[in-house]
Image 1: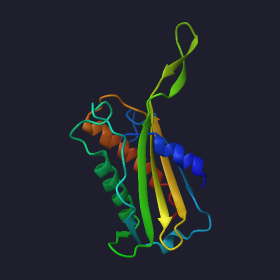
Image 2: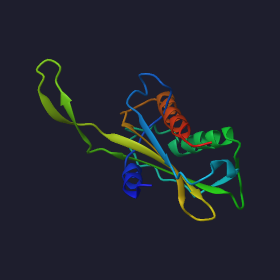
Image 3: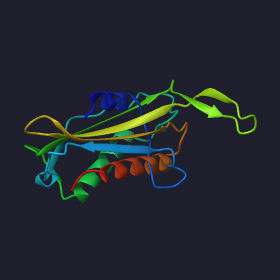
Length: 175
């Protein structure tokens, strides 16, 4: 798996979703180790707590919303759908995720009237989920979702965007 892609993805951040105009900017991709038989995995445990970008002014995460807990809930849901259970002791695989934002991201925008191009600041975010074989310690699957950061979103929009991102990632996890 491309380590640079995973590291870059972890530096960004994304928010939540259903397939609609609320999620149209979310791009999702995943990559699996082609030698791994995913049917052999039945349990997982968490690597530890993930860190979401500190946002004291609540510009992209409302103060009462816990994005870490929501992402963990969604990943748990997707793994349970595949018949996996969370193990306290020796699990088959370890789950990790990271989210972040790049507030300095630039994008070329074209003015529809003048047809002139200009660079505009478009904060981008990413969510990365990694599954690690507990025996070897190697990453066996990684998913990443990137999107424009929504300024001052409400909790329901965030949930929709995160749901879309996590669900779309796990659709790409081999059975």
